[in-house]
Length: 139
Image 1 (spheres, one colour):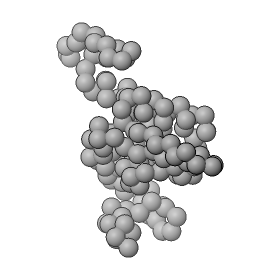
Image 2: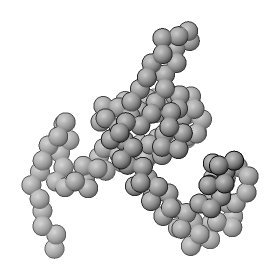
Image 3: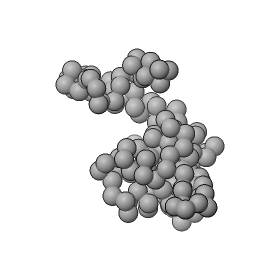
Image 4: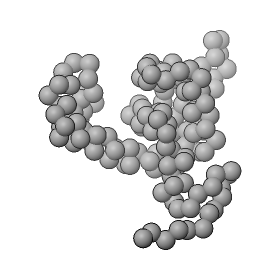
């Protein structure tokens, strides 16, 4: 039986272990996807993030970006132009999650293969497989 740890609190979050804290900071449906897109592109505008995540509402994306910024994982740069331009990128702390995000992506690829989805979802318009990613990025 696992031993229950005492509750800690940090920035209004209560947690018992570091794993729980990590999931509270970067977990949920949209945050890992936002972090993954930023890790791939380095810097993205709000509209570019939204296009890459068609299922997210503008309100939810704004909320998740604000939370990631408050947690120190994402930085927001506002350019004083007309129309105003806002770009998002990973902080050094946020970049520390990139190896974890890459491992999650790799696990998803293996899972898709094992469940038979790979043969159904190959070709143009789909995310490239690991071997195809390197040639697509280098092209």
